[in-house]
Amino acid sequence: MFIRRNATSGWITVIVGVGAAVFGAVALIFVGIHREFLNTMATHPNGPNDAFLIGANAGYAHVFKFVPWMLLGGIILAIAGYYVRLGSAFWRRVAQLVCVSSFVWLLAVLIDGYHIFPLISPRFFQDQPSFATAFKWICIIGNGLIYSSFPLFLLFVLHCPRPRSERRPTHSQEQLRDGA
Image (cartoon, rainbow, N blue to C red; front, side, top):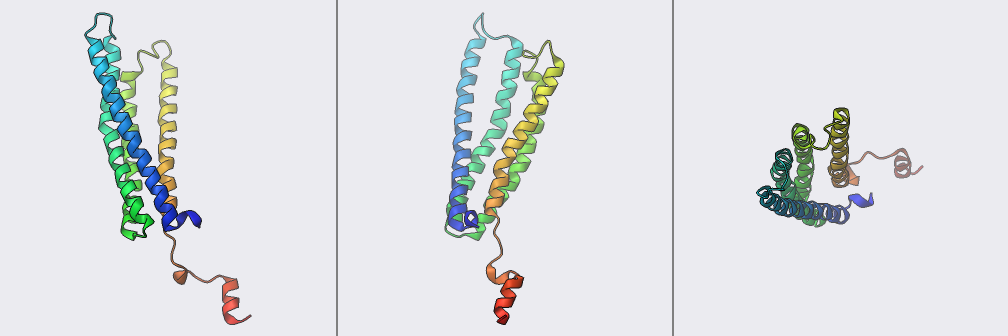
């Protein structure tokens, strides 16, 4: 299959890796700047209230706990993709290992998000707690589906089929070989 060739699967892995690394770096920079602005506003008399600050700090802690791992995984995928492009079986396995470990990362992100959601949501869902519960599960399931699609796609692309010499011949190939 065309997308499983070394050059193609290598470039796809590089693109996904660079995308994850750039997304992680931009998220860390944005949240770091936003946290500094919010801390400066907290000292202002008309600044945000305590409930908002608790929720925001929980969200920032969530980002700073998990996004650096995404940045690291993206860098490793980009490097692995470069060597996969050149035909390295070792780096193909490294990229596959990063994809599998990203499922563990995603599970940890979703579990932590489930636990910090009550800290973030009280300000927005004071009057409708059932809506808050529905919104929480929509976020968890939606993020799980979206973020699991990337490693699943990469695992499909990085799957290395057996060489033709090791495959079982099909019925028509046996007939051709036998001269029928």
